Image: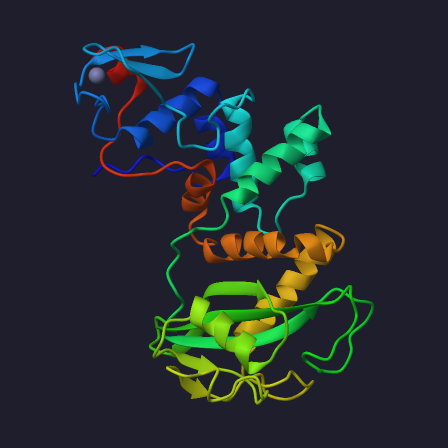
Length: 315
Ligand SMILES: [Zn+2]
């Protein structure tokens, strides 16, 4: 399998995807990595129809669109615009607003920028994502609302305040000098109806593999019932200044999430919060693989050896 070359910086990205044709080349490499094969008759020869971005089979004359299955299917926007938007969204750590996207890409119409962002966000929930495993820190926090109140999970009646549950993997690794350290792995965030044992159990079961070690604080929602099938480690502490931080990973994730929501989006309507949580999780979990995030957003599947436009034109 030959891996297509991935741009590592914005400059490389701009150089590689400087035209719609270059973007099409890239799509071809991913779409038909082993060379074109007609989905109807399996014939391997044919020709490329640039105007329609389709490949026509030389035997049965069936036309196959290069964009089918991708987010660009049936879109009239330039492919380059999709590529650049997806790149900015997947690599820009604090995320990007429709207004920023519009400004940075010089998009005339604000509705176009909003549409692009909205469509790309839809690709941020992977349907068959695998569960968190190993050591997992779990906790809840409130998003929104006027000011910080004391920890009173499940008792908040403020309609602008939303309770969310979070879980993050704790990955242990060894430094070059042989020191054992921890870093955050994958993250999950979900709106929670209340922090009772029923809802906590549901959140854990949907996001964390059984037999994992779940680290939580002493909240009663983490009951025997909620933690059935898990190993429980009650060491996550409420952060009190000056005290040792037992669960830095989930608290840091919550903190960064809030900064992002307030900074980039100036607060979020509770109605749309889950989709923002999805975006945050999507980028967080792919922070070391921006090009994988990019491909996922565009709906491009990568496998096998690449095919180029030239191969298609000269079968
Ligand atoms: Zn055919």
